[in-house]
Image (cartoon, rainbow, N blue to C red; front, side):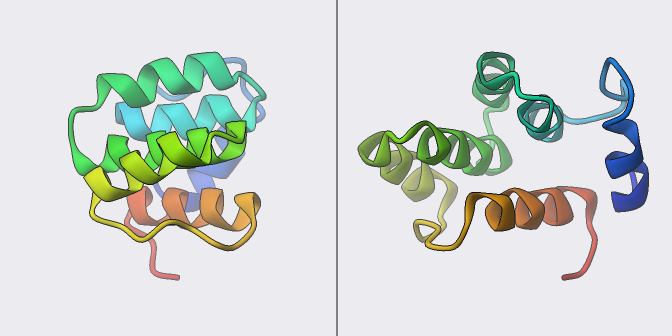
Length: 99
């Protein structure tokens, strides 16, 4: 598992670290501005982590109905804060960092 600081530092690179899960790699690509690649990676993750990232991406896209579906699959309430705050919370969760 990658540490939070290392994840943030990796955003200066052209590609994500190879050890990232699909869900965390999706957030990496989202931070780089590649929503489509992020979405494809979120879809590859069959677990609740992928579902949570998928929900975030559809919320960011503006598709609230689809986002609600993915939040429900992830077992999470729909996020109400900022997109940046949700992105950061997901990264913290997936890297195992405490808030």
